[in-house]
Length: 160
Image (cartoon, rainbow, N blue to C red; front, side, top):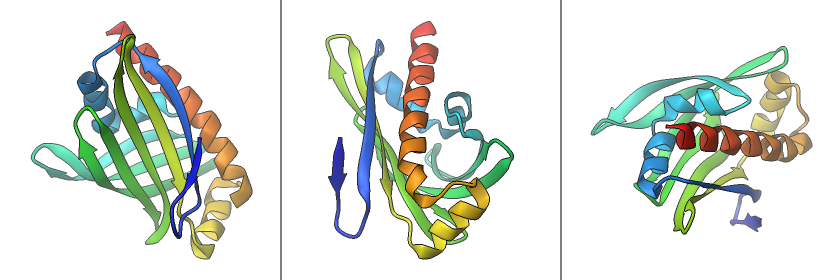
């Protein structure tokens, strides 16, 4: 699935069906610290601001091979059972919008994880330095990471 909003790069997305209600899947994803269990890059999340018990700002710590980096994130959509999304920056530069959409199906919940590139020139250079990846590689790396994240999310929630 590819879409493009004005001023932003294409959106890439991956989907999986999880045998759990949308509200349950949403609650798991919205507890952002759990991402460290599912993502092949993110290994820790530090919530820096909560609102009504829900994370609103957080720092994600990421690793790929010998490369280590962090991003700052701000929740922009938090609609229980429907969508959870956050904008990612690094050193004040825009990086991406990451999100999850949820829709009830006969088999449980269809979960769509999506990523939209929002990098400018500065964040592309920072990305190359800190992740060791050329800007053009990031969509493929992220698509593969989304597939793994969704498989792990499914495994975790269906085992509960």
